[in-house]
Length: 235
Image 1 (tube, rainbow, N blue to C red):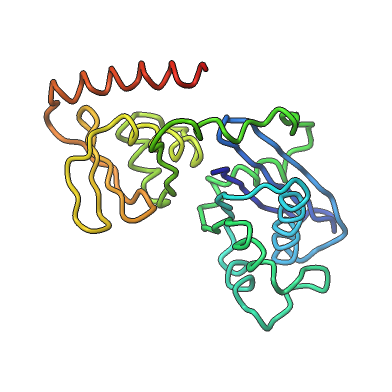
Image 2 (tube, rainbow, N blue to C red):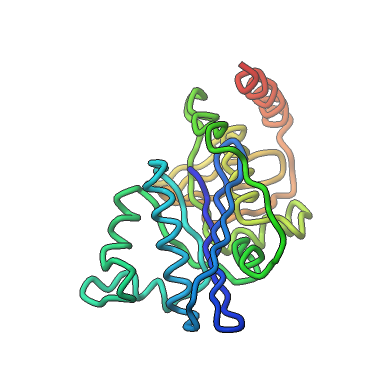
């Protein structure tokens, strides 16, 4: 799945809308749009609408949209209330129609916030070169969502203090493919890779923990799977 960020900032009676999309092959598309608007909630909703228009234009489906406004998320889910005359009431339904889930994150983690506040040009990957089938040929490769609290655990356990949300989600999906499934109870699954355990409930990674031992057999299986993965991605 792709992972998108959306945000807006208001300054000098102008709204600076921004969105950033990170695709499966790590291609990045970013946009910054300036409009006449002074209400921050409307600006953030407009940014989401601009992202939705972009997704529809290029038929990009299956993703996760991250933004930091709880007020906007509540507004999007209200079927009978118009957020703004230029924003359709069915914006949330259209996102779901594209199989795009929405999730709240802390503003400090919102990559689009940086774009909305910067004044420099940020180059994007040419759309024609984006490879959305990067992992599609790999059997059983996971495409799991990430609970926001797991990012903090990922940063601490892997000592990556500046890791972004999309980096953690992509890396943990890869580690799950490399790992052993050691426990399964209904929708709850626990994967083990070296001295780490990744807890998954349904389609979401909900916890990352450390254990105080490493199974030698697990270690070598991970090494072999990593080599196999590299060969498959080269093809």
